[in-house]
Amino acid sequence: MRFVLPALLAMAVTGCTGASQIDALDLKPSNEVVSSIGTPTPKGKVSDEEVLTALSGGTPVSAARAAKFPEGVLPEEQVAFAPPPGTLAKTHRQTIYRARFSDAKPVPFKGASPKPFEVHGVDVSKYQGDINWHELRRHGASFAFIKATEGDDHMDVAFEKNWKGAADAGIPRGAYHFYYWCSTAKDQAAWFIRNVPKAEGALPPVIDVEWNAHSRNCRKRPGRTHVLSEMKTFMSILERHYGVKPIIYTAPDFYADNLRGQFSEHSFWLRSVIAHPSQVYPDRDWAFWQYSGTGLSGGVDGHIDLNVFNGTAESWQRWIGKRAL
Image 1 (tube, helix red, strand yellow):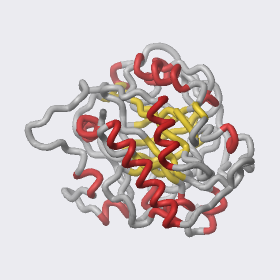
Image 2 (tube, rainbow, N blue to C red; image 1 turned 90 degrees about the horizontal axis):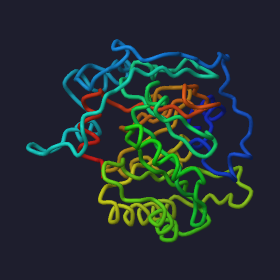
Image 3 (cartoon, rainbow, N blue to C red; image 1 turned 30 degrees about the horizontal axis):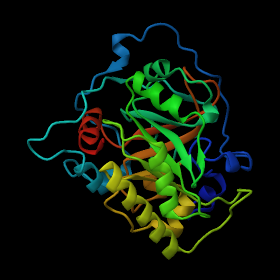
């Protein structure tokens, strides 16, 4: 799954987990390391005290966010959480487990930590290997984004297994597509639709847009006009097919080059591994924050990407009620 400040440029690493077989093998060593900790090994049944039912409650926010949105005033993205009066949620109310993730390379986040957020999730690909989805859920995965496709001819070999595993464990899941700048939007949309089912209750599909600087096959960096045109075409095709607006995943450098002031009607999923998104994307409301690529959790061997939802457990129920397929 690199922005204005030099420190961010040096430390941000692009891409969802295993964003590409091509790119993941060629990534430069990460500069995110601050210290190391061991893998958590909680045992036994989760106690009642460790379960958060989906009831309303405040989520601690950064001082910058509190100043921008005083009490009682919500940003546009959160206003959109509430479905129209008289409508019902598309899915049953979800039990939210307290997040028990840790990080192999923890950092002191600038602005605010992701820990106080109520709804945590993961994103995965074949690089996570065999996942125990029920265990992952008990450790706090309340949603999952699963790599499905890349370009116009690559499918993640673990997609079908992960798609079914997450659903069987009761984890709301969505599929993401790693956009390839060397093929057309129409071909890539057709490939995604061919491989990702229109499943009731699924999260909106995701377009993962970033620069592929370390790709062995395609290092194109098209101009902003071309980027926006291709994204619009791709997302319009997916919206017509799935009936919901796709989520946009991106990283700081790509956002700075192309996405400022664009696609305000779409939910954004933002990568920011050393700071709260308000510090890196100060002009953008967001729905999901990918805060680590080196997370640790029961149910997964090795690292896993960690994320939070920008809202309370209650607003999460409303969000999926409005946005799910």
